Length: 425
Image 1: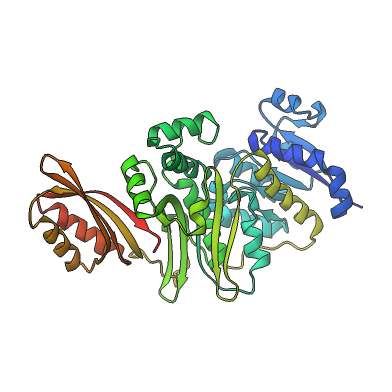
Image 2: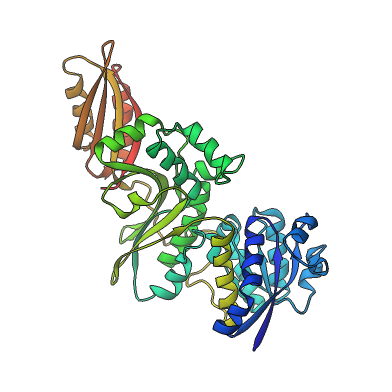
């Protein structure tokens, strides 16, 4: 029976979850996968944390050199996070000929070209299933399940923190601030939630997934990004009244015109499968030219879900002799022949505060029409004191057309656009 030694770098939530799965399921993997996987080494600053989790004292390494010089270690798991030490240690492992499994979406998004170059040079494996959507096997699906297809689009909820926040705002009527505090209390959000709520985390993941799906490098810098920090209870309430649920969506599309990649809060019709994805759960909705629509759903974070994805990669690496790398030229920047679309098409929700006077609505509609923004739905609410709130949902139109129309509406003097959100049409 094949024997494989594993080292785990970092013993926080993900690292400890991986250790637990590997140790508890060791016999199961011998029976079902024909491979004996042993954790030979754990690198963790807080040695007591590792000891408390049952790691033998002699298996706790003091530095990266101990790990990469250990001949019994064939696979190195990076669960440190961030860029600095993680990048240094992963490159050291790859340059030593060790296969690397990582859950680090920021590292892989920004430096996969550098890591892959080192892996190829040393004929080492490089696996990253756990970097995107936690325990949901989205990367394996793209690489090993949908090769027969040209993927034309993907749309997903790929950040659990923001989905939890928006769910609490929708279901409980919480404010944004209240929902974030609850997420932090329950461990779904960091003390500084910026990476999640401003959409960085989702943009890193979309960069990775769209590169795989569209077989070309899609750098992080090409991803349009908006977060959820400006979302109000009124936005949520208006959406519910119109039959929508608000989600932070990651959207990637490929057509003859080019590629568009964007992350932003979006109203999703209540009848759409993504509308029912709540709390910290994630889901990705894919469309292939042959298979049609597919949706993958599950937990997008946590010790065991993410650990599950890491162990899946470990088993795959241990049971496959040939290493596989990108199906595209993996460089720091996009291929010069690839066009990226910034003036993308979408339907929009607009909330406008305006003077409650005769002719105001017709003038606003005239401005929208001038920029080819047509209205599908509209509602008016009297706010008193000569003010009214106008809510519009447009037909699908161009991003730049809406921005120009908003600027012109705001210049009218008697109206102000308070909120702009995109809508899945």
